[in-house]
Every structure is written in structure tokens, then in C-alpha cells.
Amino acid sequence: MSVTDRSRLSLMFRRVLLLLLLVLAGGLAYAVLSLPDQAVGLSDRVRASMETSGVSNPVTAVLLNFRGYDTLLEMAVLLVALLGVWSLGAAAAHRTVDPESVLLSLVGVLVPMMLLMAGYLLWVGAAAPGGAFQAGSVLAAAGILLLLTCKRPPVRLLGWPLRLVLVLGLGAFVAVGVTLMSANGAFLQYPNSLAGGLILFIEAAATLSIGVTLAALFLGGWPDLDV
Amino acid sequence: MNSILLYALAGVGLFTLGLYALIVHAHLLRKILAINVMGSGVFLVLVALGGRSPGASPDPVPHAMVITGIVVAISATALALALMLRVQAKTGRPRLPEERLE
Image 1 (cartoon, rainbow over the protein chains, first blue to last red):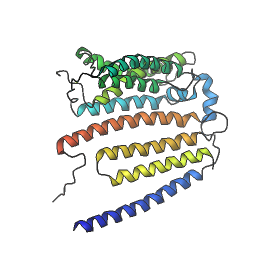
Image 2 (cartoon, rainbow over the protein chains, first blue to last red):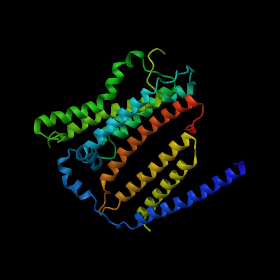
Image 3 (cartoon, helix red, strand yellow):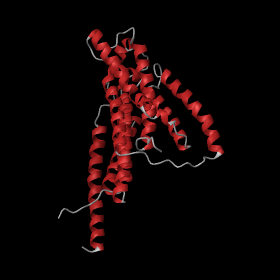
Image 4 (cartoon, rainbow over the protein chains, first blue to last red):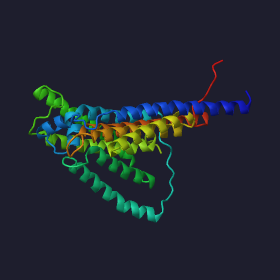
């Protein structure tokens, strides 16, 4: 097949593909347009059980209480993704470039603010938009900023302390679930009086784990102790 | 047309755009970005449709699902990027090898 034949074929392929995708987009748009204007969904049921959830932000109530299983398994997905990345090999050896003083002073201002922000988001999640994932991602951003300025955690923290923090979120979640199961027979069924405290405890552990896991994913491999 | 439908249709558009890029480009980084664009389209549709509930506050369940989805998408993207770097290191090219089985 000559080059012109191939490019003509590729052009035709793209046109056919474009046509097919336009049909798909039309079908999806029709599906969206044919939905009713108003739908109650599950918002009434959520509102009805807000009293028993232990928090006043409905999204947090759904995430940590009504659909706790989703969030539990999501923590597991994060951990499995990190194990997958680590199984591919060690992180590339880091270059020891001295960062410029502007970057260093900016990091010195930003990182404490981000830590404060993460704590605030974690706390405010009970009543307003915020929560473990938002706080965890701010924490991860602080960690990535430190990694970008060639700041590495001391080697003695990269062994079991790192692994402990990584499994802390999932571990706390499972521990609470199993404890409740032995107490009242249902996994992750919080008693009303304890729900708020238990959610904050799980979220605090999850925030730490999410932040450290995302920063570790950014490294792209397991941290090599020999470097 | 109200704003909810506008957002939902924009989500459909993003999804289709991402699907096109996913099929057309061979470079793995572009494929990973395309999958993320598709995912953003799905999230946009979910959040927009959550706003259809009567009353002041939107349906919290789709919002919680989107938060879950974002975290899963980040993990999958990180794993995909690590795999892409391995492919690049092994074959020298950031694309899937097209070996003919003969």
C-alpha cells in the first residue's frame, strides 16, 4: 500500500469515526433531553435520615454514613493503585538541584498554610462542603510541592512508618466497621450518639492516608531506600 | 433550555470529544488525557442531573458519587502513567507496540 493510499484510508477512517461519534453524541443528548425536568432522586430519603447521620452536610452524610461501603472500597482502590505503581519498580533517582530562593521562600509560606487549610477542610466537612477527600488532596498538593523542591522525607520514615500511614485510613475504617459489627451486628452501622465522632475519626485517618498516598503516587515508584 | 440541560449536554460533548481523541491518537499520554476528559464529561452530567431535585439544595447522592469517581479516576490515571513510563522504557516509544503475529 502506498503512502497516499494509506493517508486516504486514514482520512476516510476518521470521517466514518466522526460520523459514528456524532450519532453517539446525538443519542446521548436525546437521552439527557428526554429526562424529566424535575426528579426527586434520593434527596428526600437523605433529608429524612439526616437527623441520624451525625453530620449536617448531606454530601458527607452520604459518603461516610449512608454509602460508607463506597468510601471504604474507594480507600482500597487508592491503596491498590499505589501497590500497582510500586510493583512496577523504584522511583527514578531524584536529581539534587538546588531550588531557587524564591521557590524555597514560597514553599515556606505555602506549605504551613496548606496544612492549616487541610485541617480546616476536614473539620468543616461535617457542616459545609469539605471533608476527607478535599483535605487529603490539599495535603497531597503540599507533599508534591515539597517533593518538587527536592525535599525528601528522611530515610528512616520510608520503611514501616510510611506503610503505616498508607493503610491508616482503610485500617481505621475497617476497624470501626468490625467493632460496630461485633457490638450491634451490622457492618458500619453507627449508633446515633457516636456517629459524628466516628465519622470525624475515620475522616481524619482517611485524610492522612489520602494525602500521603497521592503524594506517593506522584513519585511514580516505590521510594528507594538505597538512594 | 435551562442551565441544567446546558451543563449535561456539555458533559455529553466532552465525553464524545474524549472518545474521539482516545481512538484517533496512538500516543499513550494522549489516550490517558482523553480518558480523563471522558470522565470529566460523565462527572459533569452526574452533577448537572443532581440539580434537578425540587427544593433549594441539589441531590447529594450524585455529588458523593462524583467525589468517589474523581478519586478512582486519579488512582487509575497515576497507575496508567506509571505503566506508560514502563512501556516507554522498554520499547523506546510511548505507544503500544503493533506487532504482527506471523
